[in-house]
Length: 241
Image (cartoon, rainbow, N blue to C red; front, top):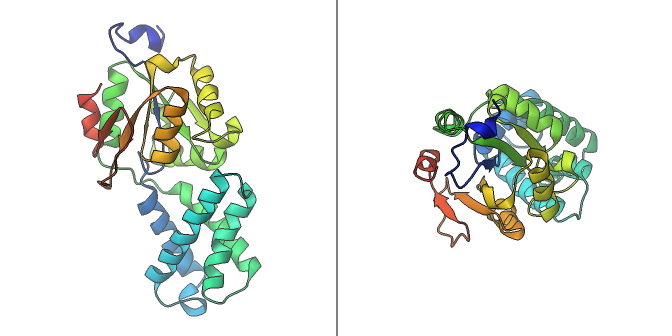
């Protein structure tokens, strides 16, 4: 019996596309833990600053700026990977490209081994699976990194298709990545919905292709989200599905 055959005909949605980072996988907590280890391993308290919080705050700033530039096509993946470390070090007047590249390599190797997910993640995925929905991931991430995150956090078993920006050669909010995802799971816009935390990538992207969406507002932002639904906790998905 296929998954589709288990879904009651009266259900409006059949394909649920989840974002990964900041939606299910707790990126902020995992990234902070990862960078804390790197800060210690590279003795950055001696070379950079004795305050990890200061280091993390500056890294977080540069990471956000460079991700935005990457998503808009202004820089390459490789530039993103190491220049966020490079720019962080420059703010501390350390122009050491080798150190930046080494730290970047360590970060990319260590981060996907972290496993913290948001509260009720497993419960809601079990609930949706038992109801017969087809669950997929649609993520602006690197193929190898995102798959390792799924393995480390034990989330991979829930998803039928895993579509990354790297594998699809496109990126949310572009229409092409949504078209790629729908084709991969043999879905249609009318019976699919995007679930994510990013208004620009997830919600605007779904709107661009005519797909319904759910804004996962973990941080309780006071924003007029142009989504079909809005939730602040994953358990609230039970009120929709």
